[in-house]
Image 1: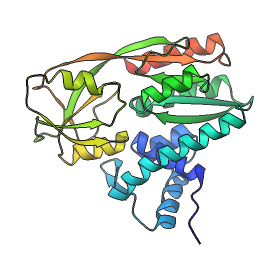
Image 2: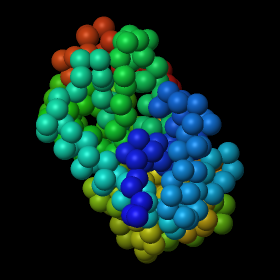
Image 3: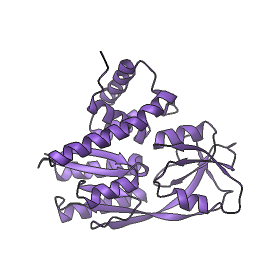
Image 4: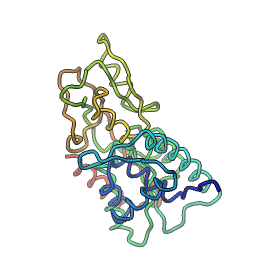
Length: 272
């Protein structure tokens, strides 16, 4: 009999890859770390392959894990789009869509603020590229959107995030690891290298894939600085600077004005 994968378990796995670890994903999903770990082990058992490896205090993805991460995102997008087309969100459900760049340091802040303001609501996360988050916000399919692309749906600038190069101590500066398109920081980063020799050696589908490659010494990568240095990496200062990128917040009409203000203040505090 063909294996049937559970959508909830796939959603957990995508959160783990976006947050770079079990503990942070559990916090954002309002699950216990044991439950999140159980979901990952269930996928490994059902698929008969290893998906994650320990990497410092976080995780890395195996080749099979990278394959599943890419396909799981497509499956979840089709699933969620289908459900939305036929069934609007429940009155007691709030959808938070966020760029992966905001996942580890900012999404828990958003979830905590919303949970306090709406204790009886279920909060669903949709972690994706900024362009996809913008589409969800513009179509009013997300109650809260956090992205690096300006939305036409009542978006407000949260802050300008510095873009910096990261890599290992011995990483070659002419080898670049990037997110696959669409990516809000890819073009500004490569434009900063105009006149310098470089080669794109890997394109990643999510943040964990990207960080795994950089930690393994594939090359250096540009990232917005929203919190502490990524574990195992250092700020590379001998490459040209990259212009800052703006972070935007958008909310739907279901979010009260005072909650929107609280979200904005909480995000700005978390970035400082």
